[in-house]
Image 1 (cartoon, rainbow, N blue to C red):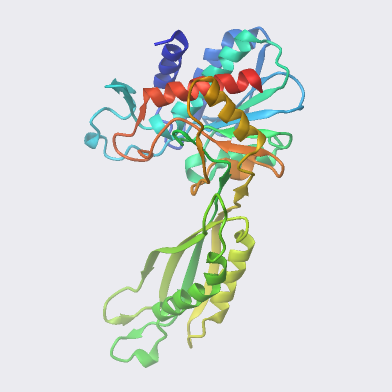
Image 2: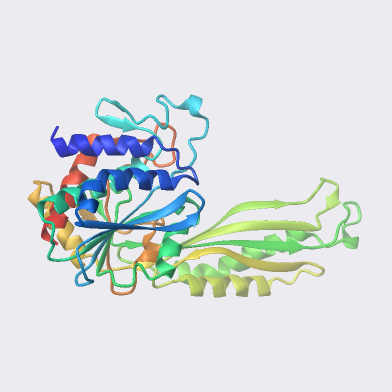
Length: 381
């Protein structure tokens, strides 16, 4: 194993040992700054922090001056809970290597991508202290909850001058230059309780939700018919429902939650208008409906052959790797907030579909390939 691969694995295991489940990202930032300390001391790299909450700092690492042809690299430092740790074959925060795989929470999502970016940036900065074009790396907090860090950085203008943005989320040997948006919403129904033997004396809140379900299906149908070459069709799903107090009481309250994944041709504003129309279309005597849009992130669509995708393909070729498939991402990343209009986007990083699962792992071959590709990308940007 090459020295830089050994170095990268050691850094990855170090940051995986910090259980950043909604806290303590500052400790990962400390580890990264310590790793980069010689270059920071020499003035080749500069770092700064943006605090979100106690023990939760976003880290910004800057390489080179100015904003001309500025490349952004971004990865998040938080992870989801490990759940019942007794169900894991290997301790979730130990970073255990077995048969070419590194096991642990965050191995795939996405401390492997973050570590590979950091090591590739260090190698490039050691080789060329004065790059032709600048690079900025963002290590963010709170992506797994509501993209807290990216929201904060974007609002403060840190993404305003990026010509390209590379997100190191797990994609394996696939490049994703677009991602769907998301809407989480709640519909609450208020009715009137009554004895179930005399339902005419009450107003059944669940009837309101049933009527909404029918109305929203009709309202969103034209939007669901749209399609995107990379992202496919948008989706709408009712995912949670609750209501009633007892089997012999007409329910006076009920609620449901829904999830929508949007595309540029059928975007968040269009879906919100459809939700509002569906609520207003419900007419159940004595039942009132209200809509709450709980979370929303817009879709990000960039060309499949944008400059960053081309640069990544060239970097793969330089490392004797086949051209990657190019497709859209159905999930959500910090790109929803950090990718501005005109910014070339690519989501590309080591990992697989074990994100958020027990015994999450990353293949070391995948990790090392990403490390090499990132290095070639930075050398030729």
